Image (cartoon, one colour):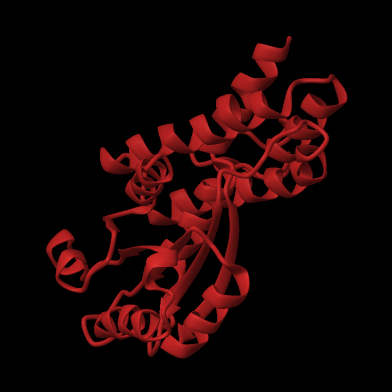
Length: 227
């Protein structure tokens, strides 16, 4: 029974179904339990929180990522899946400490000064939380000094910077420079991402990593966690 529930959670993440009222990306699923109801059922039946997260939610998002790369689904579809995972994680949060699950690390995320775009950042937030990281979203249009202040106060292991415009990506460099001037650069790993950003640009401004999308960002942070 446990595997059946986990399998349904995984499938409903892919379908982007938060509740039983949602039709699903492929349609015709109204009335069937969504991720919310299935997560509640999994908790009620004593399924390990780790299995709900790893085998259900995270695996569901990985499969969605594959479908996204294959162009079977698109950004709005991915956002629906991310919303379903985010809703489930809120239900699971009170149970994490009881299960002895310790966060893998703390991540601060921000869209840099002058940029109001947050779709990519929101997806990364959901994926990281689903993978077991503590995430604080600082928001959009963040001044370099405001980000520096947050790093000093929160003491994260990672800082993710996002930009969708070529005119604002230069503020990633300014933010890293501000971290250096504040003596905090060596205390945090900086990962950057966004449509105009590249691995070459990341290296040129002294970032520690680059993610072309939310799934690659998760992989990069995972690789840096073990170093």
